[in-house]
Image (tube, rainbow, N blue to C red):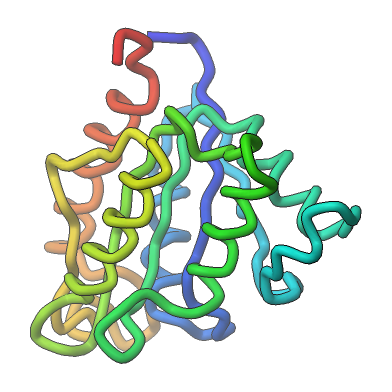
Length: 184
């Protein structure tokens, strides 16, 4: 395992008080000292348009560079209308272009979904996985994390409940192993 690991964190929800942001922040706080985790901000990205492939757009370049520099990407996202949020799909598309400059190729990616509903955002996670596999990313598949009734996993103050903390701490260990494994 490498001595240091750089993780790019993408949060699929743009809401300031997003439950997914709360889970992402908890996960980030559990990372060992050997891991650097930096959020990829996606709210300012113009909608992807192939006409932009021959143009320099600063926010696109910022995101592409962050993704290129990362050893792995952690996506924490809700589900919108039984699929991934539009802002997340937009950044996936931006990273895949221009043609032959796909930053997702061989990038290690893990997805955590959380939803107040009973399915835990599983459809969003499956759609992210489908897009990433088509773009030749290496997906972490064990464990898959889909937090159903996610608001029940938060205490009244918005902190993560002890039961969910233990579950997410196990995920962090598995994700760090996945991200740092250079033999894959």
